[in-house]
Image 1 (cartoon, one colour):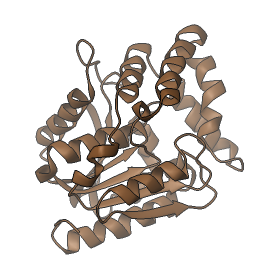
Image 2 (image 1 turned 90 degrees about the horizontal axis):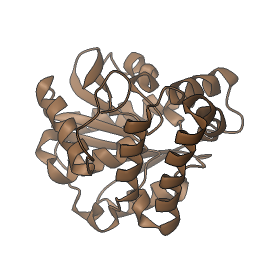
Image 3 (image 1 turned 60 degrees about the vertical axis):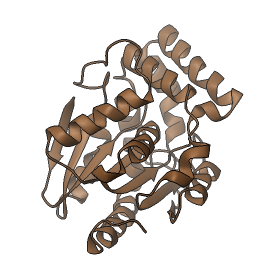
Image 4 (image 1 turned 30 degrees about the vertical axis):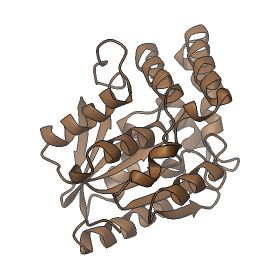
Length: 258
């Protein structure tokens, strides 16, 4: 796995969404590096990272995160996941809570396997990517990730990132999402958790983030006004402030559960 690092302090590991890459966190690498050692990965099958072998399940992606934590000596770490990255992060928290200081789930979900519609949508996305090609796929889908009033450079950046997805990596991620529903296991999360969502998120939606916050014991919810699904890229100032404050609280009490 390829990673990008900045700063020093308690480790903060960032997991991007299904249409992203490490570069989706440029604003966090710059904005949080004064207090944290910020580490953003290219997920397996994305960016400069190789695909996982075979047909990996969600546990394989969680194992990949754990391997990164060990490989860059970042244990215990704050773990932040956006969308699909948040689903992976949740699985890491369930499997290896001793490796984490905190969990931040941004514009994420319990998994697309929760509903028949969600599972079908994941399959449809893969077929759309296969038939259109990455550039045309991104031109159609990426604008949905931002709020209606998002600045054009932000929309263009989100689109450019998505246009670089590779079919094998995206297909594996979509299959994993379609097979996942963390609903029943969320009460087992013991890691201090922050849930962040843009108020104009039209992909996973505000209701889904509220469901995460309600089911994870002690979780805190922050809604970012006028931001869509890519809230960390659209409103980096507000996003970084919410994350910074939460991580500071966790670090102040030694990273113990709420």
